[in-house]
Amino acid sequence: MKKNVTLLLLFLTIGICSAQQVEVIKYDQLKSLMHAPNGKVKVINFWATWCAPCIKEMPQFVALQEKAGAELEIILISLDFAEKVDKVSHFVERKGLKSKVYLLDETDYNTWIDKVDKNWSGAIPATIFVGKSGKNQLLHEGEFEENGLNVALNNFIKTIN
Image 1: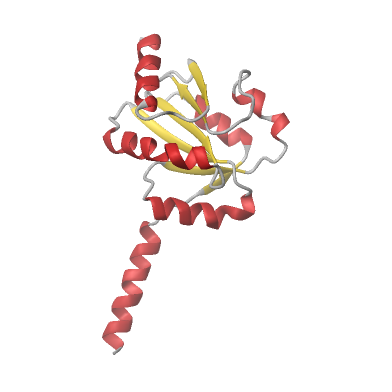
Image 2: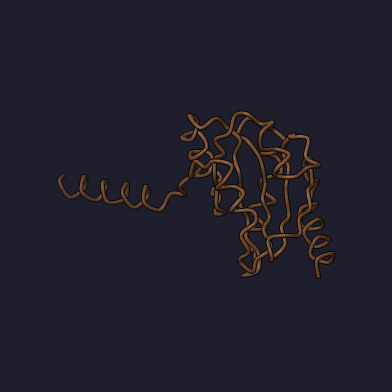
């Protein structure tokens, strides 16, 4: 019996340690994530667990992450309330998300949406493509249709090369 309990605790510990952590961040950290040059094209998706179109398009981000090369970084920014970080973490675990996931703790949307992109209305889902230098940026507001994420990413890469 002790052996079974020990094994169970070991498996639970391994599962907890390997689970994706969702970090709660503020706008300044988001700005740094978006614009810090790291030699990779960044795909930054703004979403929430309560947003049906966000959830519908999420498999495209999962597929892109699975085939992403060394020159691509996918970052998922949850706009759920910070006190719901456990709900977001459970969602990430349930969906098997491997991308970096952050929860943006900024409830006064008018103070930061225009800073993210002056053309963004604030509606989600929204995706921003950022060039390797951290300077070139393109906003896609709304849900991607099937294969739309790949098409938009390829078009963005063509425009910055």
